[in-house]
Amino acid sequence: MRTTVTLDPDVERLLRTAMRERGTSFKQALNRAIRDGLAPAPAPGRRRFRQRTYSLGAEQYFRWDKALEVAAALEDEELARRLAVRK
Image (cartoon, rainbow, N blue to C red):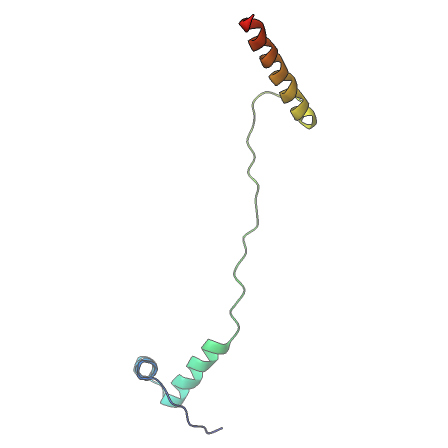
């Protein structure tokens, strides 16, 4: 297919540089640049996710599903202790 294309000066310089480096014609350099620019980008390589775990020491017998209840009880004990000290 023949068509007229108006190139910006910087684009023409890039094509001329590619022609010299690769030893190709203007037509080949232009077609290659258009193909490279319009081709879909390859999907980025995905690394497998790996969750790192750390030992918390000796076996824990704490019920984490009751953590808020324990925190509330500890807070109540601390408030009672502070009130007792004021008297």
